Length: 163
Image (cartoon, rainbow, N blue to C red; front, side):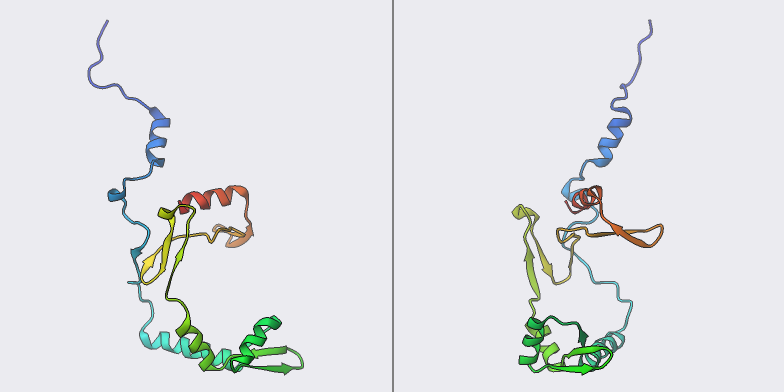
C-alpha cells in the first residue's frame, strides 16, 4: 500500500463555488459603498451650462402637459402659468425663477435608511451607491435592448446585489 504525499484536495466544485460567492473582507474589496465618484467628465462646463439653459427654456416655453390639479395649483401660486392649446391641451409653464428656487431649496444630502442602521447610506456629495429604491418594476434585457416585467427571481437578484 502506498501513502499519498501532500495535502488532500477538499471541497471540489462545491467548495470553489462557495469560495467565489463568499463576501470579501472589507479591506480586500476593490470598491465599497460611498466610494468617491464624479471623476468622469464627458462634457465641458460650457456644454453642461448649455443643457441647463435649454432645460430652463423648455420648462418656461413648452412646459409640462397633463399636470395633476394639486401640482398645477402649487406652481401657479408660486408664479407659474397655464397655457391652453387647442391640440396639446393645457401646458403648465415654469418660469426660470421658480425652477432655480426649487433647485436652491432642494436637499443636497439625505439619508436613505436601510432595514439595519449599517445598511443606511447618505445620498449626495460625490459618494457613489447602488440601490433599487425598493422595487424592480421593469427589467432591461441586454441581449434584445427591451424591457420586460420583473420576476420574483429579478427582485431576489437585485436585493442580493444591493446587499
